Structures are given as structure tokens and as C-alpha cells.
Image (cartoon, rainbow, N blue to C red; front, side):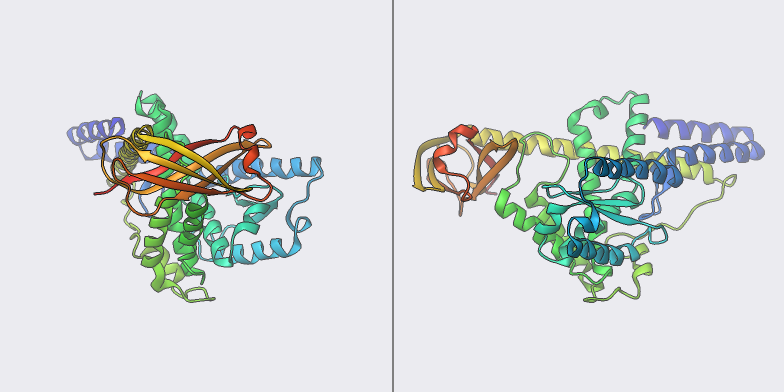
Amino acid sequence: MVWLRFALSVMLIALISGCQTLKKVDRGLYQVAETVSERDRVTGQRSLSMAGRSTQIQQGNAYVERIIANEKKHKRPVNAQINRAQYLRLVRVFDRIHKVSHLKNERWQPLLIKRDSFNAFTTGGTYIVVHSQLMSDLKSDAELAAVIGHEIAHTVANHVYERQTHAQISALAGSNSARRSGYQAAFTHESEREADRIGILYTALAGYDPMASSRIWQRKYAAEGNARALFHHDHPVNAERYQEARAVGKAVLPYYQKGHINPRATELLDNNVLWRKSQQEVAAGEGGGVAALLSTALGAYVQHQGAKQEERRQLQQASFVKSIEQGLKLESVRKSGAHSLETRWRYVVKGPALNNLVMGLYLKRNGKVERYVDHVKGYVKPGQVFAARFSLPENLHVDSLQKYGARFYLDDVQPVR
């Protein structure tokens, strides 16, 4: 709103001062807009960014090159040194996705590093960093394509520098919301959702099954639940991510030509079922400065309101889950095998009937958090007893759970509406 009030004030002054002054002020406003924003490659609208593309590449690549230097310093393998087949697979899938992206004219390269985690990331430059465990966990090239598309999309949408600029301007404007950790997590959460949508479109345009992304999160939800921290989360939880990825995948399915890049890929980047890119931009001195500044202010305001709304939604859901958790009474724990146990619970409070109830078992072993979940089938009504059963890996014995600080928790639940 600060930007909007400023822009409207300048417009009023310019109109009073006459045409020549208006043109001069408008050109100045355009320069201001160029300093703090860029045209979004996806929507064509103005978005906050104080760093031009060359700066983004320089800073982003410098970060990754430090990672490469550190890997060499510690004599850890990278790329084909880790696994030649996996690296060649990464390059092959990456090349197809990159060819249909908004940044296809830039020279990018994937980097495979040895890490025991399901992760990949970009830093705003022209690298995508992929952990070796992720390559092993993904079941198909289409799933890998979805992850790569998501990561490239973060840079396409300029999420790294957009968030930095938004935080700087919010601080200067004295925004109380921007100081809250919940708001910051929610802002990132919405960027993750946008990257998912863009990445799934890329997957379809590159000739990979766009439903693959939903299968990743469906599998994660079945195995891990939502891994909900019960407070703020900066990524969509697994169930929500699965549902949205499924909806987006179905929407872009008509663009999918199995094994082939869609010949209309370039056209479809600008106009598709997910968005229609704005091509209009008025020249500086002819109202372009005012338009650019207003567009920037409006875009920032919409993002701000979206993050506040998501923050509220997360708090409401966390509050509901915690209230239900307090109404669950553990009645018994029974060892049903060396690597399995059964718990019985009673829903003791007068509350709504429950659906999609997921019970979790949390422990910390060898410095790593482990979660095991059970999806309780059907509805649970007040006063009802229900069972939650946990299957453990062969290297984890039921008798050793206490040693690892194991505890039960309510992972997720929805009221029956």
C-alpha cells in the first residue's frame, strides 16, 4: 500500500503540472520501477526484484561454485563420479525440460552431489543441484522431470530475489506482518505452489507424464503423512501437494505428447490453461512509468495478502490439529512383532467426527529424524476407540524405541463436514 499511495500522489502532481512535466515524471517513475522490479517471465506482470538477470546469474552461480570447490576439497565425488548411469539420466531429462522452459536460451547445467536426502535446489543462477538420494528415490524419468521443472521454475519466477526485495521493502515500510516467521514461511509456501504449477506444465510440454508429480506426493503422503510441524511450514504438506499437483496435471494433460516435445511449446508457455501472459507495456514518458509502478505495487500487494491469508490458514489448521490431539487418549500399546506395534486410542472429547486421521511415530536415530505413520481408515466419532499400527524397518527393533526418544503424535486430521 505504501507503493500505491506514492504512485497515486505522483500522478496527481503530474496532472496538475502539465503535459511536459507529466512525461518527465513518468520517465522517472519508469526508472524507479525498473530498479525495483522486472517483468515476470511467466505472467508478464511486474514483480519485485532489485537484481537484474546478470547479477542473479553471477551471485547464484558463485554460491554453487563454492559447493563444487567444497566437494573437491573433501574429496567427495560429483556428477558421473557418483554414478555414471544416474548422471547421464539426469542430463538427458534435464535437457528436455530446459528446452521447453522460459530460460531455454541460457546455458544451464545440472550438478549431482552425493547426499543422503531427497532434495534438489537452484540458487537463481544457471545451475540445478540434485542430491544423489533423490535420483534413487524417484521411480521414473517423468518424476525426475517434474522435480527438475519445479527447480528451474523457481529461477524463472525469480523467487530468490523476489523474496529478498519484498523483505527489504517490507522492512522499509515498517510492515509488522513481514517480521513474523509464520508470514515468511507462508510467502515461501506460495512460491513453492507456483513453482509446482510451472514445473508440471514444463513436464507436459517436454513429453513427460504431467501426472508424475502427483504420484511423488501421493507416495510421500502414504509413507510419511504430512510430517506437519503443527506450526508454520514453507512447503505445501504432502496431502495438499498431491491434490494440487493432480489437478494441475489433469489440466495440462492435453499438452502431453508422450516422448516428444510439444511442437507448440513456445506458444503454450505464454497462453495455456494455467495463465495468459500479459504482453502490454506502455512506453516510458507516455504513462509507462505510472503503469509500471502501479503494476509493481499491485503485484506486491496481492502477494502480501496471499501470504497473510496462507499464514492464517496454517494457524487455523494447526490449532485444530492440536485441539484434537489433546482429545486423544492412548489406551494401550501392544508389540505385535519385532518390528511392528499396535496402539489403541480413544477420542474422548465432544467434538466433530474426524476424517483423514493420520497418527505418527517420531524418533531421532543417528542424528536423523524418522517418522512412521498409519492412515486410520473411515470416520472416528467422539467416544470411539480406534487402532493405529506402525511397521518399522528391519534395522529398528520395537524394544529400542525408547532409546531413540520415540513418541506418538497426531500428524493430520480433518473434520467431517
